[in-house]
Image (cartoon, rainbow, N blue to C red):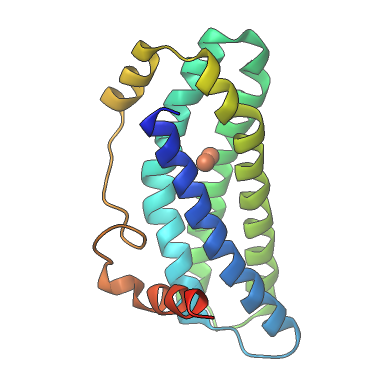
Length: 179
Ligand SMILES: [Fe+2]
Ligand SMILES: [Fe+2]
């Protein structure tokens, strides 16, 4: 597997861990607990400031190369690129609502749940329909093009140095590991 693909896969694994945290929080909220808004906001910041800014643009270039190599993938690639735009828009709107509107409104909880469901489906589709095919059909030049035209950044939550602004996420991930 090419290092770029391994890295994208790793991002998916990391996001899946955050989605698990979100699901547990959501179930607790449905049972009547107040939402842990600071934690949820940090997760949303990570998704909109890291994944939307570094992960999705890399995939967009990969998708273009894939559509170029395999005409059958054009439809799925177009839909996934469209989902990147939609997810980024919804994500930013959610961050805005979570930052400025009263905590714990059911509108926020439902829209967050909807966003997380969409994100999970999006990643599953990429993993199932795009990543393995890319492994087969992309050339060395294609991978080089992806490397040359996209930026990489250190992951602020799962990378070697966790940014202070994600302290609550780190604490929760550490608790999950020791359970
Ligand atoms: Fe994606
Ligand atoms: Fe992805």
